[in-house]
Length: 633
Image (cartoon, rainbow, N blue to C red):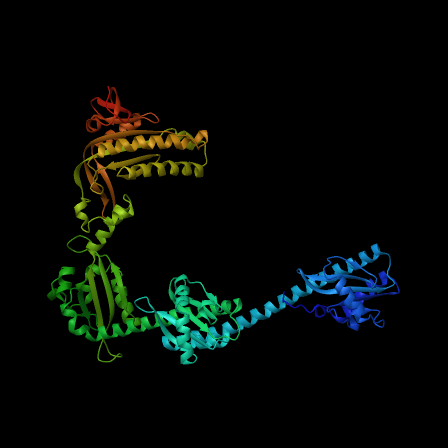
């Protein structure tokens, strides 16, 4: 609400007259009821009856009598009650003449006061809503018009100056500066408006403010204070970039929150326009660079490492450089002067023929298209290919098609192997692996490792009586604990098999000298974690795990078809760990003799009777881990 409320302007003349008449009659025929907004006067159109004048001194006396009152005041001159809106006194209800008894007078005046205050509050709210709607309409209309202007400008310098000029006019600021980040991420002036002397003052006074706004991305108003002059600073930013700041000064009066809001909206539109202009400039530069490269391509293609093939308008190969011979394993004499489809017959079953045809018919270029043909000599070849028209001296003259390609077979192999590794190792470890993945022995390597199988006991029965959604949820939670325990102990999870997990320790992906101890420690820690986890679960979800651990020589590496490889291990040690796990009770950790030999000084075990395990001819010595400590028989 404004500081000075014109109470009378909140009511229509007729509306106030009717209210005065209705309430005056409640006071009696000899009473005069009026509304005063000043102590020294009383308008005739704010009293009833309008022909009976209330002396000014009476009005003044009643104002004085009610000066500190919050309720009805009755004196010898009459009765009065203050009118308030939002804790601000805006007027006085006055009643003189022959008044009814004091209780009735108080009741009538109090009711009249509440009625006027309620109606006045509604009128104030309507006026505020109307004013705000008009302000919003003005802002939207301005921003819409400005947005159309900015989006048509693609020159960076012109756009910055236009933004500042429009901002200064809308906010009615006398001077302003636009500061943009340069390549060194320093704010430098990009445009200014106003007198030179004023601009220098603004730049000096607003330097710190501009830096703060540009860094934080939050607009600020500094009306006087340490800056001496009112300043308004708004950031120029997009969703992912801070471009700079708009700094305005010299407005008559002070900058308001409305100015800040309006300039922020303008700055947002300007930032998008600036970003579009920058992208347009980048595209234009790229286009110019490509055009320049095409002009020199005929002179340098023979010396580049990429394969280069050119054909004429009848699809006859005219050029076949050395790199093309090496990559495609075809001698140049077998390709030149022959139809492209015959010389490169092995490319027929790829997208290559269609790409060439599209280039010729649509006159568009294809860049970085990958194909994977099979060579006549055997094996798959991965090519990264760019195809475009071979231009003559003029743009209208077409000499044929130019094909440039690179052999990315090794890169594809590297990416496939790296993708396999990512399945088993944390991202941080993958980034530290050698570039030459052959050092990891992914193709297959004999190696001493420790294999661990763990199986959730009772899960089959649990899954039979529960809905699939709950079964999967419970399974995932137990596997989450298992995965964390494996990684904590420098192992990898090779695969999940139903409700079982296979973990490997000391693979080429993650070497570990104490692999047997790490596997046993992992099982022991996981058992403890599961026991603690059970405290938070309903009884039917409290499932245990059985563990089987074995150490021995296996072959570890990629196994599978060329297009789908899986990193795993093959060997009797793996089978033995699986059989031990099958014989383990919930919470029981069974290890082989070879594993026990490596951890005998670090664990306490029970030596179990030799077992005849499924699929094994002889009896197997089995040990149950009962604690982490010194061995005891």
